[in-house]
Amino acid sequence: MNTTSNKTGKSGSWLLWLSLLLIVAATVAMVAIPVFVIMPFKAQTAAGVEWSYRLRSWSPVATVVATVLFLALCAKLWHGARWLGRLTMPALLAPLLAVTWFARQNHFEWMFNPLPNADYMRAGEATSVADGDMVMAVELNGEAVAYPVRQMAYHHVINDVVGGKPITATY
Amino acid sequence: MWESEVDGKKLTFHLAGINNQNFIMRDDETGTWWQQVSGEAIHGPLKGRKLTPVYNDELTFALWKRENRQGRILKPDERVKQNYEAADWEEQYAKFRVVTPVDPNDKLSPRTLIAGLVVNGRAAAYPLTALEKQRLILDSIGAGAGVTPLFIVLGDDKKSVRAFERTVDGRTLEFFVKAGDAPVQLIDAETATTWDFTGKAVSGPLAGKQLKKIMALKDYWFDWKIYHPNTKVYTLGEKSPQSKT
Image (spheres, each protein chain N blue to C red):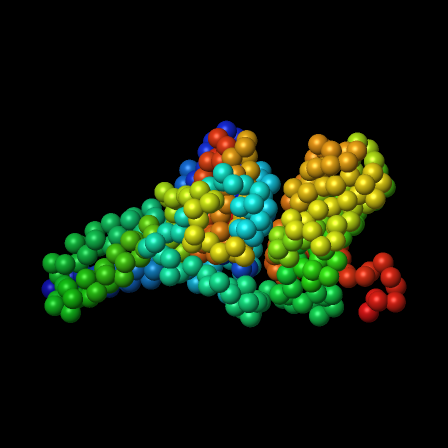
């Protein structure tokens, strides 16, 4: 009798262990796939971009759900687990927490810092710009603004208001 | 450059990815993904919507400053200054490989710099080398009643490009660059009016008139072609048959 109940307990816990592994693998894949698909200097397909969008949109919530589920399973397994099992849990939790955090990051803005509070100077005072440097120039309702291309090629996006009109300069 | 408002809602854009070497931006407000080059929403709640383009020029700083003494210019961010492109960045970029498929029958090589225009949905591309040789190119886009006569002209800095419609009060004009002048001055053959690089008639019978600007985008040919596959490509001296290859 004892042996039978032990057996069911064991196979049941194996299923839980498998679920733990699957949760971690699926969550890591969900966050990692768009990173690899929408990588610079690679050709992208329309489907690849579409799936990247979906995964990126789902992952902030999905990673939290996965982490909660993972912790609930761990709580269930903890009591019956041996030392190896108890070491495996944090080892699996680490990548899960890492991707849960990453899903909230915009890694493109790590490479190319945004300028949420951009500073400007008067045309005549701009000594940091060479005469031959290219600028993107806009004029709206009498206000003229220039964005040096060398800076734009790094920041890529500047949100601004020119002549009272909200605009986005992109390069 | 785009208007940030869609349906009266102001959107804040961020760099969010890359699609065939052209970047994707995401707005904080709706989470929609937008393609930078076309301003089109490709995924998300606003999918299918297009941002309204804002006319802008690509000029040298010297030329812009000459035209806009009171203008304001973006200050470099000291924290990331070392990441800004080097002064010779254009030469460096020209060496980057192109990852999108290359058409062997293409007239232009992928990294050819062009000035691209779109008028009434029709696109035309002018290689910068042709503009450097001719200074001003008289052209037309479209045909029949939908034709738009235009010209594209290089500034005296040999880098700034502007394009204009060349119909004034229903009359189509032919423009020429006045030799040796800096700032560049233009003259039309029909009225001998003198025009400046902003498209304004400064002296002569049409003084005070303003030519309608057409946005000219400097781009690599391979990039432009992805988003404007039916572009008419201007080839230098295409009007003389013997120079055709």
